[in-house]
Amino acid sequence: MLSAITNRKNGYVLTLTLVVMVFATIIITTMSMQLNRTLARSREYSKVRLTQNVCENLVNLSTGFLSDRYAKLNFNDKWSGVNDFIEFVSNRGGLEGYLWGEHLSVLKAQSCLLLTNNLEFRELLNTQPWIEGFTATSVLYESDAGYFLITSAERSGITRYAYASLAEITEVVPVLAACTGRTFSELKTTHGNGKLGKGDYFAGPVIIFGDAIVNSGDPANIFNGGLAAQSLTLPPETSSYDYTKIATSVDEYLAAEVSETIEKISSLASITVDMGADIQLPSSLTEDTLLVVNPPSPSTPIYVSFNDGKEDKEQITFKAGGSSFSINLGDYDGVEYLNVLVNGDVVFDYNDEVSDPHKAQKVIGKFDITVTGDVTVNANLIYDDLYSAFNNGNGNSGVANQGISSLKDLSEVLSASTNDLLSITALGGNVSINYTQGNGNSSHGIKTITARLKALPKDGKGGKIKFPDIDQVSSEGLNSQLFVVGGIIGQSIEVEGSGTLDDYLDNFFAVPDRKGASYLKKKLQINGLRSW
Image 1 (cartoon, rainbow, N blue to C red):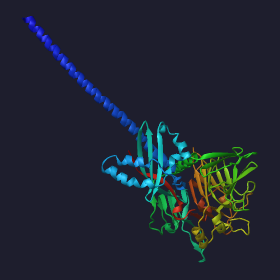
Image 2: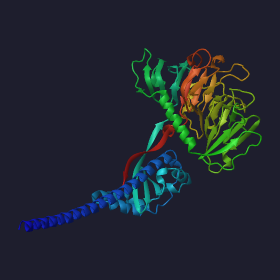
Image 3: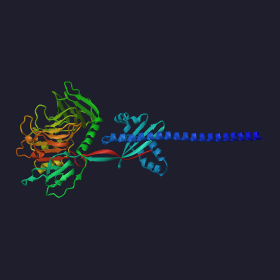
Image 4: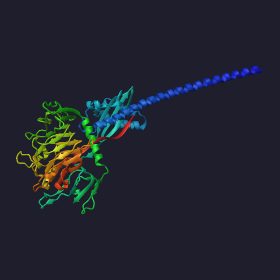
């Protein structure tokens, strides 16, 4: 009897065990299915998010590429995927999708710029590791409100989009940005006849890294384009002046200029010319080409001059070691702007044998010249449209040794406009501005430079604007003068001999080479970004 009872208990346990095992199996199976679904969703989400990241990366890459190119591009394309994009965004659900669809519906009939059809951009895109395996599109539209960019990416049947609104930002190009070591004073006239006495005048923005010292007069009549400085010392007769106080150091400011310069020359397709016996000129040039000029030896400077005076040509000439070549922009279709990189030292003069800082070199055309060594400016460099204001030579003698001597002359230069543009950057070098003749004779202390001069320090070298011989000139009754149409940017401005700039320079004038908004640097930046 006892044995039978025991057997019945064993059977009950077995049944219960089977029930528990079945129940556990169901639970495990259910959880496994749920986990698989969760993992599948997670993998799907990861793929979607990765595709969205590619779209967002594409927005950033496109904006950087377009930043200083967009003004030259044409919006003549049609995007075949615009309807798919609008439908995708509209169906994202709710009121938001409806509003996006309404907002974007105007694109169906609008022309655009298919950036991914641009060969240069495609080459840049193909170097990005995150684009591997994706089919990508980048499209730029223009509207009254600005620009907007649409990017798409597709892989393994997953397509996603990003939309960015882009806005123009403007950066004022300063006519002076440096540690100057100069004491500024208001420009005065003498004898009641409008003749200029001593003093300074800046018609564009000025940045002084350090203390801006005003010795006499009203700063508002000196810094007509505004002043930014780390501090300001006013003369006793002036109680206040509204200026912009800055904390940025000169090293920080110039580091940004160096990065921008390197980024620009790195983005251009280069064509190299080696100075020597057998010079091969480029058969084609574009405004996105970088003409790289190498000297015959590292110690041989390259002499650069412009229009030869025989004809009004948009011309630049390079001479070194007995060899020379010229580039005439008129020989290349559609080229109005030439980018140049010289690997070595450069001297700007009309002649590579005899130096004459009296000479007035006419500059016709637009040239952006970057030099990896030192820059020496001997001749006066003067834009064609301003040539008559500074060239006081008889006939075709082409000299500029009298300077701006009256308010009338100054007013004419300020009101003039020019189509020419010259930018000279010493990247890792100094810029020296000479006043005396090469044979050692004294000269009138007059110098006119219509250019954007930059001395940018790199790898611990360069960055100075230097006046090697201004202490040796004789003004012979004329005010010694530096007149810049464009700007000067550098770490410091120094006299190499004894004394300071105040001892030798009576007038320091600097005015923009572009009038109004045209001397603002315009770029694109991202205002807002949305991805789906």
